[in-house]
Image (cartoon, rainbow, N blue to C red; front, side):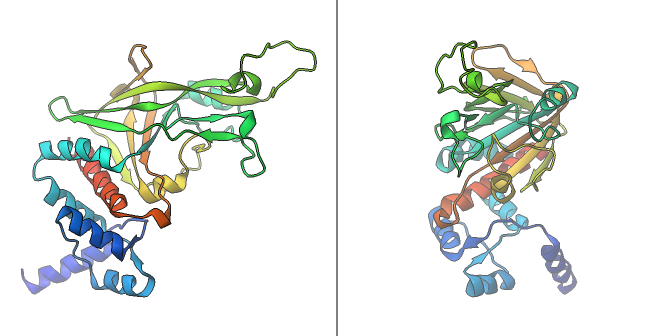
Amino acid sequence: MARTEKSILHTFSWLAVSTNFRFRKETIESFEQEHGFSIDLQPSQQDSLVDSGTTSLLLEQMDKLVTEMTPSSDSIIGFIEEHSKAIEPISMALLVTNEATWKIMGKKPKDADCMLPMVTIPWFHWSENAVTPGNPRGIRRHDHGTTRITGNSDSKRIVISGIGGNFCGLLEGRVADPYSGVRPLFLPGNRGIVGLVPLYEKQDLRVIISMNGLKTTLYPEPDKKVDYTYSESPKAFYNHGLQLKADGEQVRLRVGKGKEYELRGEVKVLFGKRVKEKDDSSTTLLFHVWLSALNRLLLQQ
């Protein structure tokens, strides 16, 4: 390669977007040993490892790993399906923005201008018993769910499935709490919380998305119009996540044993992972490669 080309490539690499999460040296070395692929760190990244013990990775470095680990488009699908087990649990939140959903949000006691997800994996819900000084909103998160993704290059679609929460509207807390038992609605003293809370029912979920013309964003910034109360935190998606946007007619949803139905409006799907920095491992880095592979699959159609 000519010197000029090297200079241009070097300049471009500095402009490239990097991961928001910073990986430890031990994590990078462990990944290289386990999977047999090396990451060519730049001098600045090497210096960062020496100075702080961590470094971010360029998206072009992640994309290079995807190329090396998935030599064909079919192998990208195989990589996504195969490694989803190794990196689980994977979280998902699906939001649908249209006139009807905004009308429902308008009834929220707080943050009426922020959209709640229609389905999430895992299951988040409100519980009166969960209300504490440390958890004033009474949100329970269940760790039993993980997102599974399968792809089909011929039909150009992906299928997202798992056990999670299905939004069923805003109800009085005494009705929406799955752990409150069956309470009569008319009792002397008006027992239970009567304020409106979102009801999320635990369900088997299946989302089918046509991959034509999707818009994706790796490590999306928090959206002020999204209510993350009943999903993973925006920090999880920002540090370890991928966002896709689609028109409603590209997305079909099935809840439980019900029929699939086409969504209306703008659909946003967030994939992410909750990672504690002290638990950072080669699996975390593999998850980021997995996100890059999923991003490439969604954009190549």
